Length: 323
Image (cartoon, rainbow, N blue to C red):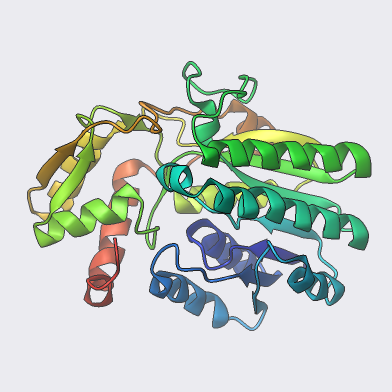
């Protein structure tokens, strides 16, 4: 069994990835700074499931701080580093670009440099479909992504390039995963799913940017976590899409499906379309199938049902969570 460093361990994707690794019998060192970008109670909720397992060790540290990272690498022999720590969110990055580059670029560099020093050869990096802004559908890994439309996308592009540099110079094996609209139970409160679910349930207006025709290639959290673990195999340097690979779902359709599941009608508060947002996303996923033996398994309606079930089970404390 392996020993893996999972950064951003209290985050949405990282917590589920760590959980699947633990279920498979591996040891996981989970690192997170528990920042207050969103309500820390959600992070603690996810961490509680991981802390219950003896093979999980939590380290409260920041990937931006190399001095805090050094003893983590010095105290363990890692088979791989899965870097899922990131500042996420297109719109927020416009207001705080330096913060995004500090975490997504400088933090990635800190990890790569410590891997080089300690002989850790495998690196999995979370990237984003937001890099594909302006490219034709379906988005392919071969598409040029040299015109990022937000500081967030630019920071992810820079992190990808750093990974390639360390592959080229130091022989690190790097899997770069471009995730497409991940959703599911215990998702971030700044994402549409949890916000829409809560607002519909409480009868509060949904802030709808644009006319609702914009579409996303929704990908269920368990599918994303499985793909992330599959990317631990030796690949050299590869960029791989992990997306639903099906017909993208419009925001209007997402709201309608949640109305059915909740048995309530949404109240819409329409706002202008945000220029940093993408009109539509859609992943070409043949490469993931070829290299990882991966394809998504959870249909959107099943995933939404499980997400709403989780919301209902945790509704009492979620009512106080800042959205």
